[in-house]
Image 1 (cartoon, rainbow, N blue to C red):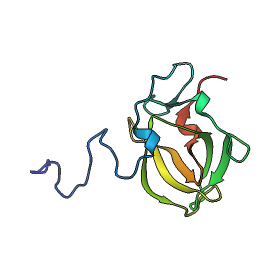
Image 2 (cartoon, rainbow, N blue to C red):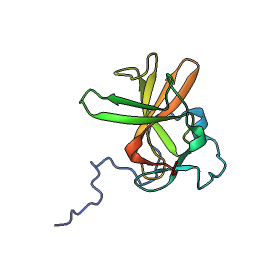
Image 3 (cartoon, helix red, strand yellow):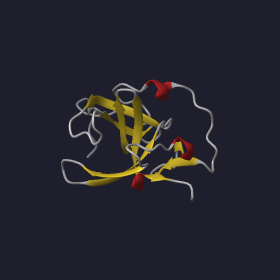
Image 4 (tube, helix red, strand yellow):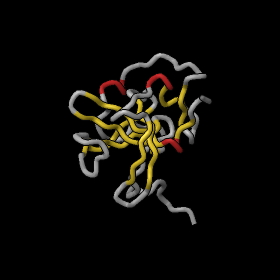
Length: 140
């Protein structure tokens, strides 16, 4: 049976592509030049460009890190200085932060809104930690 009122006024949904609440890092709202296809790192769900290989950075001496969250789920993340194809949301928190002195926020694909990783900020630096299994990287 179809409800008489659609959508339900008690359903708090948003339109596809509508921005999420929260603060965006300053660099996320600037117009970015087009990415070179051979260098683009894509969202694993919708294939939208998220960042580029050249944006890869080493944090604490390495580009790739493996961590687990409070639920015990293991994540392998790749670090990038910028990710123009990500939106950042949520209040910055240091709770269960993986990097000493950092605060994190969620990072989602700006096109399909799937969770891709986290945005980390600390005094003097910031970076994205994108979940390796949720992004498509160019062949090495």
